[in-house]
Structure formats: C-alpha cells, structure tokens
Image (tube, rainbow, N blue to C red; front, top):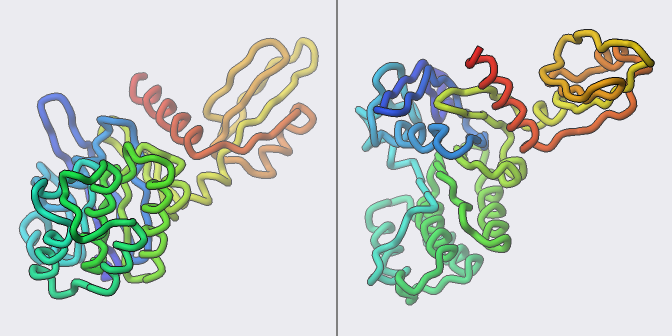
Length: 296
C-alpha cells in the first residue's frame, strides 16, 4: 500500500439482517478531502465505523494510516479525529474540563489552536455542556478533535441540523485544516452543497454500493442536460453516453455523463440548449441509473 494512503478499503463486505455493504473499494490519499455522499441508509455510517475499527468486515481489507483494522485500531486512532452530529459532551462537565481531559490523553494537543477555535466558535471554557445548543455541541466536538492535530479527520454528517451560520463556520474550519497537505478528511454527508464546497473528490454510495467516484471538477464537467428539438416526423437516435432521456414528440431532454465536443457534433443542429448540472442533480441521476441497472 502506498504510504500516502490514509484510508484504503478493498473488496469490503459487511452483512446485517436487512442491509449489506457490497464489495466496497476506495482510497483516500493524504491531502485529499473526500465527500462520501449517499441518502440515509446508504451505508455511510457503516463504512465510517469500519474505518474507525468499531466493527469488523465479513470480507475484504481495511487499512487506515497504514494499520490493518480493527486489529491495530489503537495505533491508528492516535492520529484520527472523529466528529459526528450525534456526539454529545458529558452534560454536567464544562467545555474546559473536556479540553483538559483530551489534552492529558493526547501529547499532540495544540493549546494555542484550541484557544483560537474557542474564539472562532464563540465558546467559553466555563460553559457547562448541558447548556450548549446543538450547533455549539458540534463545534465543541470539532474543537476537541482538531486541537489534537490529527492526520485524518473522519466526519459523519457533522453539519446535519445546523443553521446556515454554524454550517459556514464549520466548513471554513475544515478548509483551513486542509492547508496542511499531509492531512486528509473523509466527509460523510447527504448535503451535496456542503460536499461541493470543500471536497476535491466525491464518492457516491447507494444501497450499500459505490455507484461512482471521481474528482469533484470532473463530475461537474462531464455531466450535462441537453435540450434537443427534432424536425417534424423525425425520431431521436441512440447516442453513446446518454444515460437518460425525457420528452415526447419533437422536444426531448438528454442527460449525459460523457459530455464533450464530439457528442455536441453528433447532435449538431438538434441542440437547442445545454445546461450544467448541480452536484445534487448529478447524484440523483447517478443513483437512479444504477438502481435501474440492478433491477433489470
């Protein structure tokens, strides 16, 4: 395995009574921010638990920061920061108490950075955890993870339920982390707007399977929606790279994941409009394409 791989999964299977993770294979390189995007129940949290060593795969290989998981999870977790929207601090303890606890357990604790994050997140050490709002709880959890300066940050729906201001504060901090090219982030979310903002690579997951994975810019460049107008009485021929078509009569809309000048040339004067697609539209189209293929 390359020493620059922070997470590597190969042929990973995990079966539950009503859900199976199928042949999961992907790699997160040092310096990358990977968006792990999927609807609820797609298998995102299961994948993150496998990466954290919290469960064992039925088959396949999981390595994190060079360590086999879950066998070497203690060694790997020294350099992993984990934040979830569901995380809560001990209700009767203060933010400062939590900071002292984590600092005592982790020699790499950066007290100066922790103080900076307190100011940025408008938190105070004397605040008792039970008095914190949902957004403040998430910010505090992120502070505790980031101030350790982990090489790998695993985020499980961290912006879920946050107001726009709080979401912006967290996303800004994630981008600041990535100024260090030796660190990486695996960012699980169903919010494609957040993912598009900070991630340089995106992996789409649905029903326990990876349906596509590519650089964010490549997704946005190769997907288009094309409006075409046919001559009277003409029929629309098949075109390579067109994964969906809607419409009737003379007016049709084509969706392609292989947009290029050659496709435009083949369509020629039929094209009336070419529209770029948002990441959310690309995700939905991708998922439906693969569901239809599996159901056939």
